[in-house]
Image (cartoon, rainbow over all chains, first blue to last red; front, top):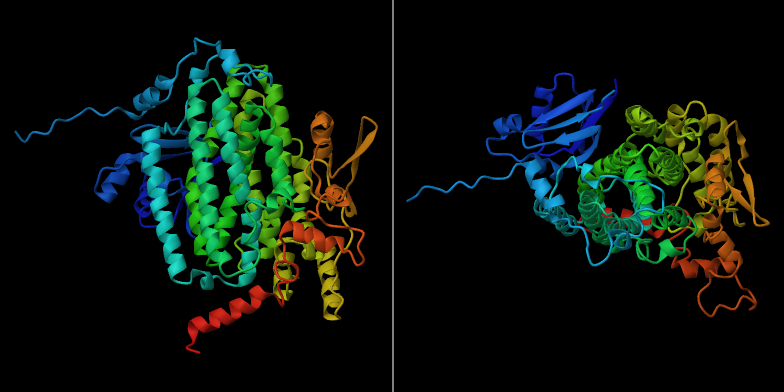
Length: 89
Length: 518
């Protein structure tokens, strides 16, 4: 099984996003680096719009993630409700 | 009536279809193959461009919105940086030499990437990649501009920032390394460009460039670089996705594409890894506070992450590039070999060098237990002893350069780290030299391309690197000083050791002024 990851800038916009990802992906591992938060996960990782909206109390467009995104790894698929990263092997 | 009319918004997938494919058309005044003459000559077969899908499904309307937000954030920080003497917040002015290397070596590449993606967007007949290339082209010119803006704040106070982004990239010996990488890619066809830059550089290698660089900048208090770096990096995830999508698309379209794509992956992985030697040196030697060693970064971002990628591509028949065996050996050597080279040629560089101190050498021993104490500590110790006696070692001959990567021949044999690696090829009765099996292989595949290389050392010897009107026959003619003049490197200010430099003295004085009232 290969590891996928996604990394964001460390800031107030990304804090609830990271909380959501960790809640929705119990197998994910948090890796905090200078100014950057990286989340590693075996196989796949899912980011759900609803979970983020619950935490920030407003509508959220998943494309807003791009403002604070640093890097990612894995095949990506995005629609209105979720973004997934996966290695299919 | 206060009832709000609710307009049904388009879903992401629907909007993407309308804003990409919905905008395309087939030409009728001229046949499509005349309009897109570069689409076929590389041998890549595409049967259905509509199979191309951008996983981010980003459309132009959303693109402007998010890019504007990124710019607002960036320039607010840059104003704050300038207004609050942000340059005094860095750990040590020595750190800025890494930033000079970035401005002179990387920022000009952003501009070439801008041009290259504009060309790729023009040359692909499919509307999906055209839109994605258009966005990436605009991203890349934004990166060049924001980097120059951010670093212009340092140019007000420190040496070596004055000519970097434009003048030196065309001339200076070590800058021909990154320049030739992009020249090679840009002079290929649009599909090879996508593998070279979109896939190898953006997907396989960009993490090794930007993530450690920006984490390093943050660790060393460089608010300007962190800010432009992260702003650029936020586009990078989209570029990586485009690169990966492109390679999968080529492989899914026709089985005949596999050997061509494999050849390009092998070539560009090696070309990219050679360029990244400069980043390895920066991580291991140039950051006063270090995030991780080059070897550790290589293991996380290349071996683990690249490994996952190549496992995934195995289903198409793609194999891990052959050069990986050599890279596994090289990861313990190249940063030391590169820094030793710059130390010897500090008089010909646009930044300052120094020898690692005792604490830094111990860190290097711990990070490189197999190689540092055995091969490199003795060399640095010897140079330190010489410097202490007033005999600081400068290498005053010019090195032979690799015909492909253009790096001086400083790398060693994979099975003998005490022996310089040379490879030789013959083409049309002339001998050409390369630094490795990887570069020789690339040369032998397209010799007619690489014999045209503009090699800085050859050019100096041919007398092409002096200011106009230089007379080499006058008494006391010093070729090195004339070359530096042509480089716009001010001898004694921009070059040589950090110890005793204007940067060192000024930083100490200004930081003192910032904390005292005298």
